[in-house]
Image 1 (cartoon, one colour):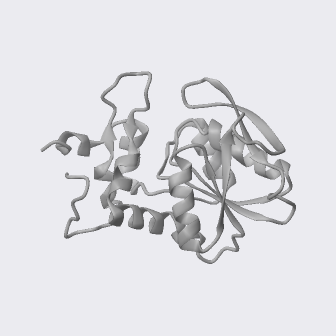
Image 2: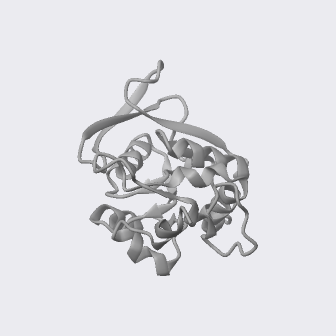
Image 3: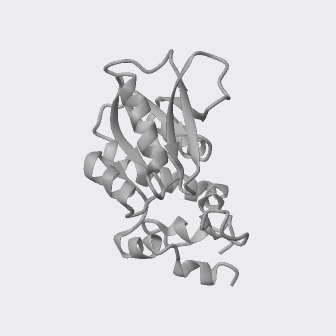
Amino acid sequence: MDALELPADRHRGWYLSLMAPNTKGPTFAWLDPSRLYCNSKALEDCVKDLISPFLNDTIDLVAGIDAMGFILGASVATVLGKGFLAIRKAGHLCVATDNQNYSDYTGKEKTMEVRLDVLRPGLRVLLVDQWIETGGTMKAAIQLVEKLGSTVVGVAAVAIENTEGGKWIKENYKFSHCIPEELQSQIDQKRLDSFKLLNN
């Protein structure tokens, strides 16, 4: 499917067929969801699906995780009419920060940081990232937000895989993702039938 094509039938999750498979080998993620952001309607529909469970919740701020969570997080914040907070990889902010160590989906030990002059007790935050695979990155973001006294209203991502970490998030926090139930098993097996049609 052409990245800019707009199908006549835009059923829930139609834009997932725009995602691209990994063609560079095992040191990269198994797919690239960001291709769907090139299509304005796909991005719009993706954001609508992500925020729908939270429309009746009080949200003060949207926070996105470095780096791909910035795209979706800022888009979600704009639609909700809320501000956006960037949770950065450590070493990039030139202001006072707090940090949290974590293991990412590759198993690498990393550190994330957030500025100290925004989060405070009572602030209700929606956390957004592009994809939740092992859950380590999102769990660290949750810990960082809560350590500073704010409340995590929920977690939103294009997909949440049913790994141990993904299940922990689903069991402990309100969440949203864009994967229809019939596609979840493909996501968990790190394959999508739509990849076969991508170049047709």
